[in-house]
Length: 322
Image (cartoon, rainbow, N blue to C red; front, side):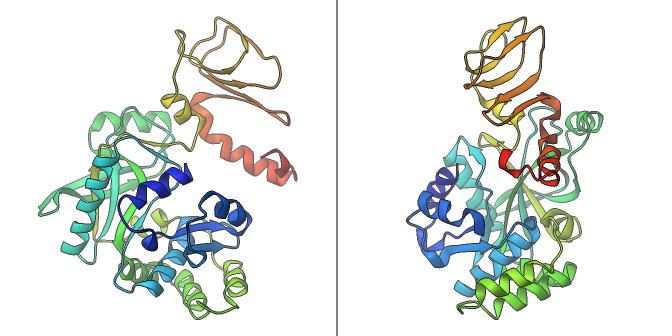
């Protein structure tokens, strides 16, 4: 998916305008996957600190290369089915940024069902411009429970939050200075080391001191000039087993089956069982993933809680199972 995301962007801009941000632990793997990326276009976090530091770090590197740049933030684990429509929407977003230089633009997806694994964006006032139809953002909402997700879905006011952002690089840095001054001060420290042999050590020292926070909570929910464009390009964020289930081919009982499990009366399940013999009887809507090291069983509606499991494994010193 990383390769697909990078290839996709090469259809929109030159490779000289593509930057990849990753953690130090993944650097060598990323270099093997994307050997055409120039070393100085690899932005290295010593370790992850959520999306606000990640985006801020990327912004100072991009601004160093082009102070007038428009920055498009794209997660690498998104499924995009209609690339032509996707590119057309990004071009509209860039045009809107040029019309409103101080704006923060995000992409919302019309909900297909009341998902509990996505954040939501509430549409506000309709804006008609040369870039086409857009909405001022009325509110951002965190991942809801099932009841609230149903309300969002049936209201017709909410879009799924794609996590895709478009803005002038100077604009996001200005907002970080205003709304997250501690982070901004850290970024200024890192900026003094750009191009020097001390960059890695300065970045690591700074990252140990800054807070872990999301760009949604730190900036987007508090900023004034925020717009959302509606996206319709066959999008999915494959961040949970539920989303993998949704896009996968299913048998006559609604099961996604990888391997050769023995099944009786099983419906609506996602099953990966390539190593051992797995048998399931009379169950539905489960995720079952069997590996040589561990076995995961969860209700599909709770597949987002795998993140909780990851933290538990880290606390127990069992990172080798991840």
